[in-house]
Image (cartoon, rainbow, N blue to C red; front, side):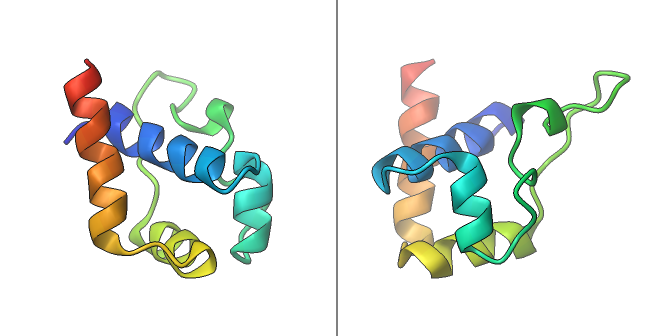
Length: 80
């Protein structure tokens, strides 16, 4: 599982729910900028991973199981 796989899974979850990543964050009780593409890497290019807390919140708010989210990660791995 890579940094890109996890972020792609978050993007897919938002698309599945027909909302933006910003709206996904807001509907999960997170800051609107939590999943912005600009926050996925530090200014030095170091990958920033989403926290388990954030992932837990988006799974709960979208009624997505961890297994389904893991399938999004696997889908991305197979695409690349």
